Length: 351
Ligand code: NAD
Ligand code: DAU
Image 1 (tube, rainbow, N blue to C red):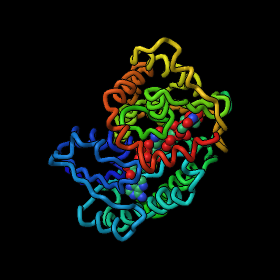
Image 2 (cartoon, helix red, strand yellow):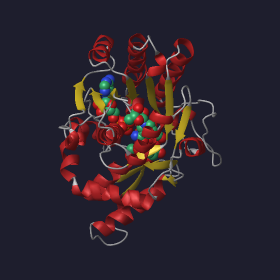
Image 3 (tube, rainbow, N blue to C red):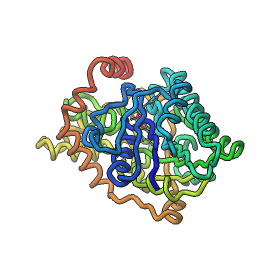
């Protein structure tokens, strides 16, 4: 069926891979990429598909409810894939209100616009909210997050995402909106903004700058290649059951320090440096407040019900990621000046 799909946050890291997949795979869908182009949004991320006839870009802020209503009506939007968010935990500790505005109020604005415009027949439309495993809080050394794990967010970022998830479920239960939610683990891959652990370390290794490891480095994350996440989003959007939640993860847990050591080994080979050279850059620094010890996803529901599985081994995905950053240093250079450097210096100075 032809559809007019609004994808929010499509100029960001994950959103750009989702937009590309949808534009290329479904020529009968019109894809409207709505993005405010904050520091994290970059149209370069989707430069390769910008001239496709089924792709359209709209610069807008999801916090502006009147504008959002207008866009949904004027473009006869049939479905929404909602990824736009403030996404960096460290920034949420410095400015929680920005996270409440975009992640909570922005999501409510989209829900309201969808509720009003689709009210004739909610069953013909879908609101898909892309969320995070951080809403579940922290695991100890054992166990996995399932779809039934209670919410227990600790950072302003995860609290804002948890709140938005609750609003999405409330619009399903109260008004009958057709919704699906997915909660994914840490993504990595091309086009990730270099404030996040993996691209930050790749960039610093290239420049021979310190690699800041928070606390003792034993914090654990479950890493998934971004294109595998985009594939999962495609499955959940088309085949996920109304009102349901799907956890998405990589079965791929790494302690931060082990991950950074592996990255150093890969980079030493790629840059023809003496083995062990990049590891000398590792610097243990002051911990992140409220730092969650461990995230790990039980993805058996999406595997069983929708037949999705990660396609890449971590070593393969990490090597592809390193290659992309080495081949696209101008992409990183263009965004790591000005306001980024001001953030970087303030955040890491005296840490
Ligand atoms: P990102 O920070 O790279 O991109 C966010 C995008 O949203 C940017 O293009 C930005 O310009 C846009 N945006 C921000 N505020 C906006 C506003 N008010 N109006 C319109 N657009 C706005 O984020 P990401 O890492 O690609 O994450 C995308 C989504 O996936 C988020 O909802 C995040 O919570 C979720 N998620 C991320 C991860 C991860 O590891 N990165 C894992 C699980 C879930
Ligand atoms: O789990 C999913 C989440 O993963 C997403 O919802 C978030 O949007 C995304 O940013 C990511 O959050 P994390 O906080 O896990 O990612 P980050 O890359 O910031 O940090 C990964 C781990 O590395 C974490 O334990 C903190 C640590 N870290 C991070 C940075 C930036 C360091 O040790 N040093 C650093 O400089």
